[in-house]
Length: 576
Image (tube, rainbow, N blue to C red):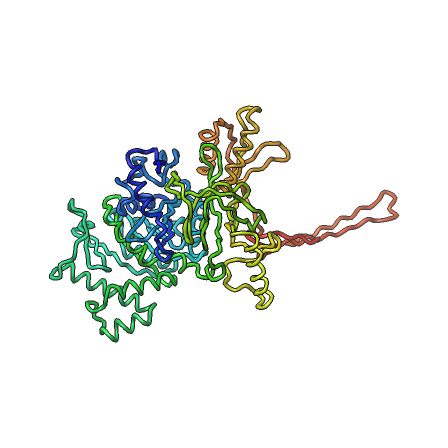
């Protein structure tokens, strides 16, 4: 098969990884769809690059400062050193296929995180250990919680001044409301990070030498004593959430950590994590030590769920019939549309057609591709739990539900209507009937946040108007948080975005991808004013005519208050 990668330095290494990971022999139980979520500059992309290198997916470690990362491939991403749009890569670790989505951390790109988290089965939350839980950390954690996504933590930059494990654990537990169970601990020497101790396999990583290798901890050493103390603390922490493990640890083994099997600890941690009762925490320093990220690979496959574990109700409802959610749209250099689809059940073959239940429309035939950052490799079939890029979806938009056929959509719809009539609600059904949208069942969609800033934008000249309008249409399809409208008074085109950086990205795309040197007006804040307390105003008017035969009199009382149960924003009601 012809290579599709332009970067010759690492194309062969990436090609090998995709070939190995695209095998049909991988069972659904060995699939992991995970995302890297964090506050900006916590080190998400750096962690991602280390995971790819350690798994053998790449032949060298990409660095943000060098502008050679796999997932940050946009020109602006490499110039600024931040992630602007999510990117998907798939690699293999211990016979498990891991589809990883690297997400932005900047608040302007909350929508990009929202639609990525919507299709994840698990998440790795990266935290800057010198800063703790930050504003966007809270936001992305809330998004993961909203979609029921189990998560584990990676405490990055542990070698940085001001890093403190206990303070970070307290920050996570109090601000995010989740119990933390540390499994990789820091060991300090002379006030500096010297080693990392893995409690799950009794290994250590010495950071002050050039070997960069995890080795077994010698039993007759002070580090081994520390390992036993920390492992005992871990076992007691697990016992709080797992009665079966508590009985095994305290009664059968009498609290002796040397007798408890590592497999029992991993099994208990997996159950606790998937049930979202607690989250494991691993410490490391991704930029300084690539090997410090290695335990994350094991934790991803051991503690985060497979697609069938995360969405058993979809499998039960759909069986082997295809169902999927379109969660992202991009356009290639020829301005053809690429649609990113998460497959929840069944399989999808190239040249097949699907039924869009949101729009009651058949779409296809489709061409299928496996994504690797900005590169796509053609494939003939994708199966349950996988993420695929498809071409041929002309009318479908972000958040649309895709089913195998109209007949399947009708059958599932009848099933759900029968359940609704019998029980009054659909319970935990993943598909719902929304009569005001479609008579067919749909997955819960992806909500776009309200814009915060707006400004005017004009094409460079009148002959570019058509290209200008088409470019804005494409950008809005790619990014649902971008709004475009025409001002009724000035007849100007107005762009509404999530922030100043978001606006800069839009302008850069119009210039670099569409060749439109647009004029952008001053940025303004889209203020939203809401009444906090009810208000009553009375006014009276008396008018006496000149002939004084009839007096005109009117009294008016206006009552205004807000109502909270009408949606995302409060609505004001007037009574006169």
